[in-house]
Length: 84
Image 1 (cartoon, rainbow, N blue to C red):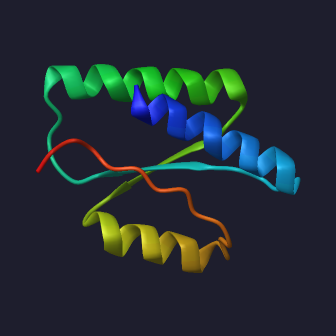
Image 2: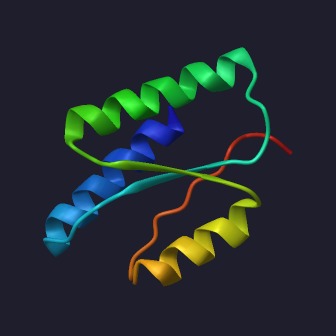
């Protein structure tokens, strides 16, 4: 899936920069069964690659900005769901 490709891309970028990596998931709505399946696969890949996962609650843009500022994040690789 596109989210798995995105995680792999972020992992490669972090390796190239010799920088830490974290996957951030912002829970902004209840997930449907197929969405939960995608998220489970994403979390499994993170575990396999040793990428810590942070789950936040709220509006996606606000939470990502807050997290990035609080943690002095300098590189962000973004993806989005297929929801409209």
